[in-house]
Image (cartoon, rainbow, N blue to C red; front, top):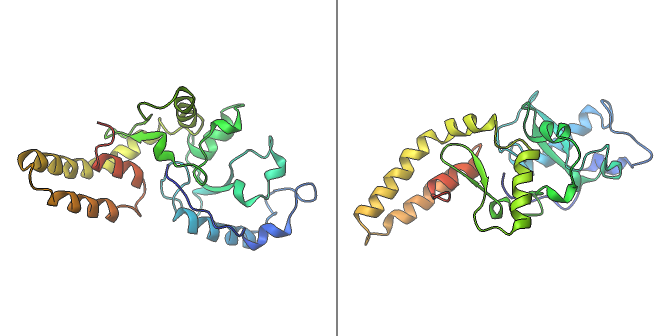
Length: 214
């Protein structure tokens, strides 16, 4: 889960519809209009799920209402309420819609808040609340993990994605211990982190490379 930058202007198709006048359905918005919405979501999310950062593609994604339509119908066509989610069972938007009632303010919203403040990914592919959070923020982190199913079936998938980077992290850690006066490795590590920013599970990769779970 990473911070997302949302465009201020909603996609044009959303301006045609209003809560109370229209209902989100298989044909509303139309297939062409949904494609326009996806184009805006892809600008924000770079083709990755808003929640798990896994890759998405045709047949493996859906337009996700952050606040569920059944509980917040007035947000049905609200651009600020829409994300792109993967379709993986038991995680992300699918998990959220099946987890039962919860206070909506409990969930970390990645285009408003910085998930890095709350969550840390480990080399084993798991995700945990950060240490030293306030009690309220620790609860929000834990509930976000639970509601979105971020610490379950995804762990093995993330662990596989991290496998090669564990060796890279160990190389940098060993070099720093052997040559404590040589700081040139820091710039090299920063380049490595930047080179992975576009990849699925990039936040987990960055946390492992920079040893944020130590």
